[in-house]
Structures are given as structure tokens and as C-alpha cells.
Image 1 (cartoon, each protein chain N blue to C red):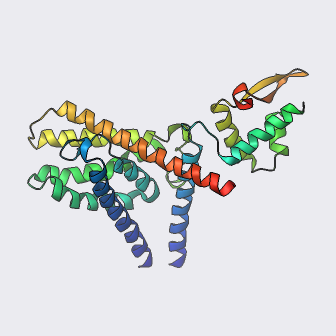
Image 2: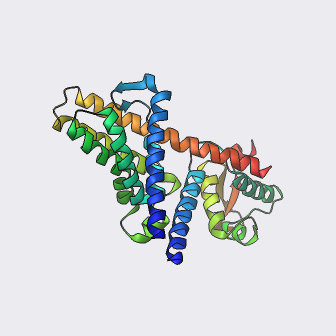
Image 3: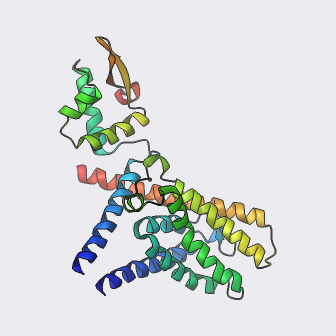
Length: 105
Length: 182
């Protein structure tokens, strides 16, 4: 019986977490969460240092969160117009992450 | 037995929160009431959507119970509105959620279909079901009045209320994130 109660509470907790994550990541307030800001700063720093990141490279080098979470944050950053894809001048198959003018301003 | 108690707690929590929200909203937005029970800004609808996303069918039972109490004050002499409205207002968010998130248990449990892009979708569909249901009940009970206008104002009130509630929640999360990041 205790197992059933635990499962019920765990299910509610995960539903709560899912809901909070969706609300937090939704668009509308033109701003980013502190974690998303840190990710944007990391991308901008790499771009500024002339070591632009591809999405794959970002996933492998960033220690901010799991790859799935970083991918989710990146989608929010791009959707809010702070980041865009640029073609790699040395390899046209690769796309690099580039901060937009909005992000730099 | 303990599981039943826990689920009963979810039901009671939903009922009490629903009644409290209705009461608070009535005081805050008293000047925005179009007609009895219809408000131009009805944020308790947003709360009902969130409660349903968290507690599913237990929220429905609680909200129907809470609406029973509210209906006694809102429509005391009208049995169709009295009993029909509580089922419409209590279950509209659940019906919307079932439609948008899909029927699979996995999707329901993990809120798989709910994304940042479609966060307002359950609130919108729920507002539509709620407004349409109430309007049909009004017509069925023989209540006179501009039904199209009442439907439109109820839809607007529920939609505005859901938006207001969700963005207030988002603002609270944003402020708490800022504070914890410092």
C-alpha cells in the first residue's frame, strides 16, 4: 500500500515538474531564465573568441545541463531572436551558432 | 485505504481552492461582471486548468463539488443551471486536456503533449467548452437574454482569465529564478 501512495505522489510531482518547466519555457515575457542567459553568454563568448560553436560541439562542451535540456534552452533562445544559425565558411554542411544583434545589444 | 485518503485530499484541495478562487475573484473583479456568474476577467478558470493538469480526474470531482456549492449561490432557483453548470465548469478543463494531450496513459502522466508553444491551448479549448456548455444550458433552461453576447463575454472572460493566471505564474517563477540565481 505504501508503494501505491509513493507512486501516486511521484506521479503528481512529475506532473508538477512538467507543468512548471513548460510555463517557465513558454514565450511571452521577452526574457530568458538565468540558465538560458548563461548558455547565451557561453555561445556569444565563443563567437567573440572566434571559436564559434556548432550545435553538436555545444552539446559536447557545455557543462551547464544535460544535452536534452540544452537543446530545449537553445530552442527558446532562438525563438526569442537572441541566436541564429550561420553557415560555416570552411564547411558549408555545418551550421554555427551566432548571437544576433538583439543579443549583443 | 491510505491511497483513498490521499486521493480524497486531492479532491478536497481542488474543491476548496476552486471555491476560494471564485470568492476572491468576485471581490477583485466585481465591476467587470457582465451578468450573474459571467465575468470579463475570470482567472479561476486558469486555476481550474492548472488544477486539472496536476490532479486530473480528482480535480474534476473536487471542482464539480466546489461548483455545487457555488451554484447554490449563483442559480438558486434554476435546477438545469444548478446541476448542469457544475458539470460543465468542473469538467471542461479535463475534456480539453484529454483532447490536447492525447488519450495514451504515457502522454497523460508525463504531460507529453503540453509544450511551451501550446501551453495556452488547454485553456483556450476549455474556455470554449465552458462558454458553449453554459450557453446551451441557459437556452435549455429557458433563460432570456442575448445568448450570443453572453457566450462571447464568457469566452473572453475565461480566456483572459487563463492568460492572466498562466502569465502571473510565469512571472512568479521568473522572479523566484532571479532571486535564486543571485
